Image 1: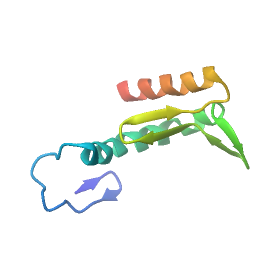
Image 2 (image 1 turned 120 degrees about the vertical axis):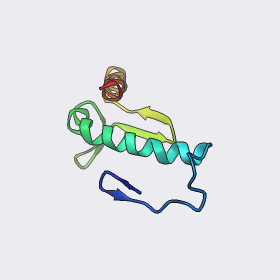
Image 3 (image 1 turned 30 degrees about the vertical axis):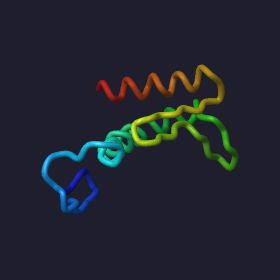
Image 4 (image 1 turned 45 degrees about the vertical axis):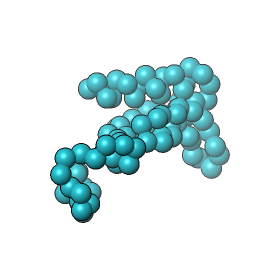
Amino acid sequence: MRVGAENTRPLSRSRGVLTGSSSAGNLARVVQEDTLLACRAEWRQKSFDVGGGYGLAVMSWSDNLYAFGQNLEGAISILSDWADALQA
């Protein structure tokens, strides 16, 4: 199976979509990576500075999203940008 530039081998149980956290995490990864790549330049100015020229903007665990900003407004803005990207 090919998704964008990624190739993956289907599991032995390849009929339909598997339910549960393993399938949710794998399917969400595609959307998350696409959104991260589209928004990363804009988020750099809003992100929490960790030093060395790096910033922490978002982290995810399966379908949960955590935002980190220089301040509360920055974190909220990152989440708002994320929602806008998903609706586009």
